[in-house]
Image (tube, rainbow, N blue to C red; front, side):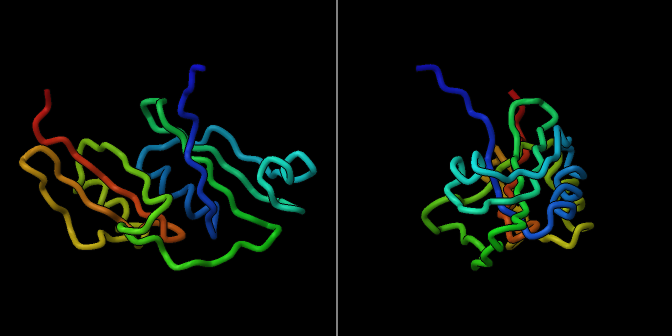
Amino acid sequence: MPIKFENVGIAVRDLDETIAFFSDLGLSVLGRDTVSGKWADTAVGLDGNHAKVAVLQTPDGNGCLELFEYIHPDAIETEPTRPNEIGMHRVAFSVDDVDEAVAIAQRHGYHPLRGVATYADVYKLTYVRGPSGILVMFAEELKKS
């Protein structure tokens, strides 16, 4: 069976704030909608599922984020995911300039967890705690092939 990666889905507190953050990083909005009804209840596994949804695509066209702001049932606040927790961990992006990506994140009020690191003179990278506590990794390849 052929399989193709489609997207990563993330529930967020504020859809517009999250779209603004990822749009400034270069992702584009493919579409927005509000979903509800029996099909949504069945697909997601929540009775009375009602959410605002947006799909954002990376500039290279290879990756998408599907963002959900729940109207019903109420969104459940949890502690932000830590890097060593089991389960969905982070969204990672290759960028041309980590410092520029960090500057964009900082304009939105989001900062690296500890700073920017260099791995074996191959990658410059950092983790940023973004909208709704989403961990976002930026990685800049230092030695281009």
